[in-house]
Length: 301
Image 1 (spheres, helix red, strand yellow):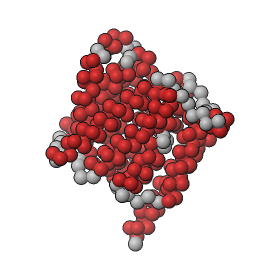
Image 2: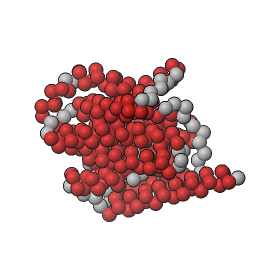
Image 3: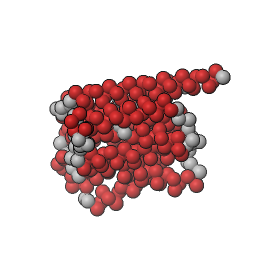
Image 4: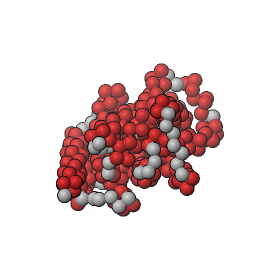
């Protein structure tokens, strides 16, 4: 039961890693609001198809509706807009590594709000991984020592990491006693409906004529893969593992983005980025070992 949620979470992280490259391909061809609208539409259609195939849709209790609306607003409207706005002035690699700060926040929020067990050793590894992410965003040891962590775009992407952590915690709380695919569909639907007035106001449909083939392919990756499939996979993982493990699973995301960006966007990376990536990978594995070992010990007792 533990293996499948972890695999699902890692698969979602792979799709999110690719999304940073896709966003950089799409942004020069359209307004960011148009990108978010189309991304949500395709994601909604993907999840709707999955729910239809399963023939299982369970409406949540009525008192959950306000929480669903707020969660959708934070995760769909705020997070995606702030992240995309920040990525307009920073690279896909730096954006992905800054987004890696969210797992630390998810783990801490799970401990504070969900009362999940939080081992002190896990905190140490999370801090080490966070340092690795900061080292990469700085670009070099010199910049790190000078306190240069990037411009306004980098700060916005870092802010989106906080929004994603908040979204994940609120979502995890709702997933405990509800069907994963049904909640995912509702959250995406609410986000899409809230974004329609924005799309109409900017006349986003006028951007469609200027989108290249690569732009449409990138939108398909964003909508079908990084929004639709990734949402289902991540929410399944989020429901079945602790917040700390769910947080640690997100650390490989920047490595996927770095590989994709160096190949497709020809973005460069430095030795400090490699060192930061190594710190993150070691931390990821260490947290998983701690959680599995501690969980096994509790079951044995």
